[in-house]
Image (cartoon, rainbow, N blue to C red):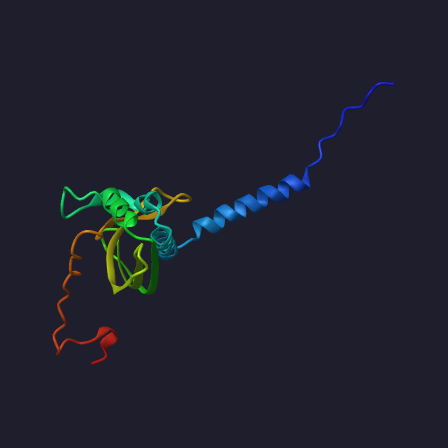
Length: 173
């Protein structure tokens, strides 16, 4: 008996998977820059807590700006982690300001407890200041630390106050 050709029918299971994949890509496109910055700095905290030099250095931009050309972040973090038994790094607040040049200025307050091999602890409290820069583009966009780990923060651009007698927008005094 001759075989009849099989008719093509859509595979709804595959179509559902395709639709789900497209939805995930669309969701990634909607990810805001602030969320990407937060994820980068959260990964930095995890790298510090795990004493993960490679994870830490991976968050630095390839064109990372250093105030001291001889400064090597990998060597510095390796040396630091070798002398510590543990690190507990916690961020309490984070402010992100997007600059006109496309970078983001980040200031975050932290508390870090360093544990030495003999059991002594040292608690440090302070504020980190970073300039971050976007790399790649959608859907692979990421923000990396561009400067600030080994340099003093640059002050924000000065704004001149409006004269006291200037009218406010909309004609109101």
